Image 1: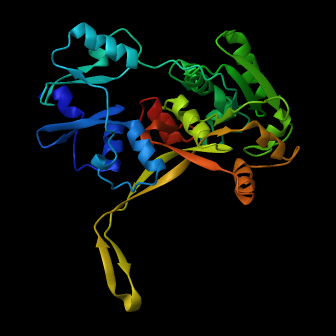
Image 2: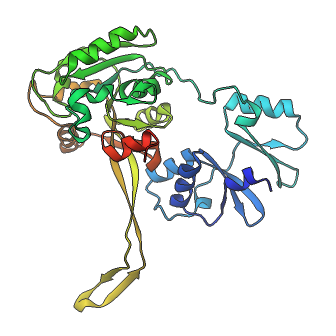
Length: 352
């Protein structure tokens, strides 16, 4: 088996967590599941996300969540036919099976289309609110000079990197909540003269928390919209997040990143009178972390108090109190980058 194919193979006894970590490490969204030497099926990041949404434990074997039908080609198909299917479905790899369902070849997008961008273009056309008014205290002293949204990553700012990801999904209507060094932000984007998107600013005259400034948009937005913090990057198909939001009729959807914490000791569970129940050697705990990206329905803007300090977590609790529907869409650990803290910012620059 080619080394390139071996890299994306996972054994049939792998868990959901194993597969997520492998996808993160390889920066792939598809893996090949094998039972010893026998090809079983394709496993996508969507399969894993749907399983997590359905509350499958992370130690569930991947064979329990595989789809019955996936896209494959047959060994008697021409290269032209295989290439056409890959382009149509924008699949990053295409397994080729013989008549006995044995894997005989795998074609990769980057080999078939070396100069073609794989990203699927969507046309969501949803408004995007970016909370860009904070002081960026975690990145001091850099933010003493620049507002956090204008801190560079590569040849663009953090804010441009965030906006580019939305633009690729068809979202070009941006609302920026600004306060700290707001004139610098305005002047920077005016100097760019970018026609790929439109920016409307709304400015708080005092700190209003992570959602307080949204009261100013009540009546200005009349459709489902995204909210993003201005210090996070999410590498995900945003149309899948929106699809989940709509299918489950959520009022608010939280994008949650899985975060893994290895415990370097054996952990002990005890019962009555200190009796040992379970001993686990160096377990790993996994939590869903609020990433700082959300999808909201426009009526929620009416629930933001006017000109008061108000966090988005308070809005979430208000929805829960009246038993409104809140959903959580999971993304893998490395799909989320918290650029607002030094370690992750330096990693984004390949310094650390």
